[in-house]
Image (cartoon, rainbow, N blue to C red; front, side, top):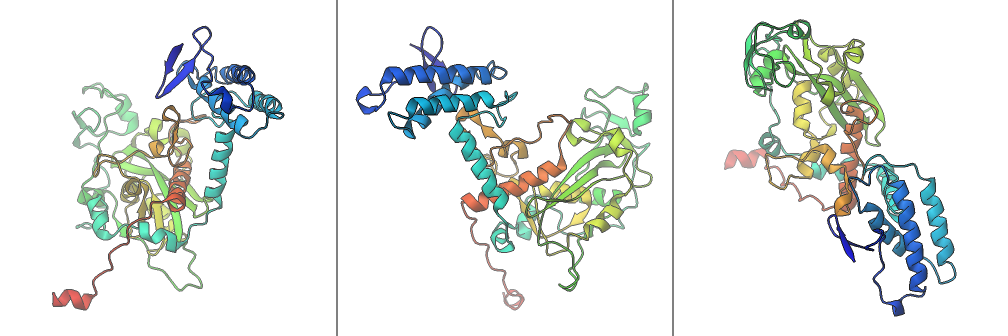
Length: 417
């Protein structure tokens, strides 16, 4: 016998690689030769189904054939077993051929059904404020994770652009003269960047405030006429400009994952694009050219859905709020709910949280893939908003539950300490 290795052992025949059953014949109600024949047939059809991904995952067909045979056997009798396998094979033949490991066609019938069941549970869960409240960050936690919780010092917005100034390139660490995209394309008097245009990035709150002023989300009005939602999920896409990294798209979905806002944002007056960063942002020159509203107008539009009481869900949400120049204290961050193994300040990528780790045969959290491009280039902020919402839904359904937040100390007690 040969052993085919991925992350665990799969027993295969030495001649053709077909998996082999290793079970006690006395424990099987169906004759082992019959089961072995059916197993080989399942394997052959999984091989055809997985032909495009088998070079990267050579034992996947064998693994799934073994699991599928066991699934089918466990639900059958001696009389129905053969017909059940034939019916399963017919179902496998009807599946579209997957082009990646995370395609919906990958898996046994039971695994696919379980994914669909989990998806429906997630979509059916309407999150309440009471369920979400324990996951909201305290202001101390927000400060620890780099959130800006107070408006930085200074007038704000007094230096929107650094065009013509000398800055340090984030990509290659060279000093360069900040130029808009059209002029940067024609640059011949300086060393070119090894990774595209020379661009700069700022994280200091005072520097960000100079480019475009921070402001608090609006206070709630009377309940009768306030249109703000209790819960939303939000994500932004950013591009590089003469004013540093700036927001170019913002997307918002409600607590059921329905898209309620999605807009491309035009740069502020005097701020020019250096690099659309399309590979990551998904923003192209063509769709940016259709942008009408600048950030100040976008923020006013968001007031229809967000007030200071709204619970905002996001992944590494501090980055989105910084680029929106938004100060908000009611935040739920999936990068913190699902921490990196190395601890703070490390964070796990949203895509990693939402992927099925087939090689380990472990479904992590959502069992779906995002940020892979597909037919488009770059991320989708709508898709990412839904993914963060679904991650929170998953955590609420599956736990563990968050530790209770310590009750705030009454002001009179603080004064007496």
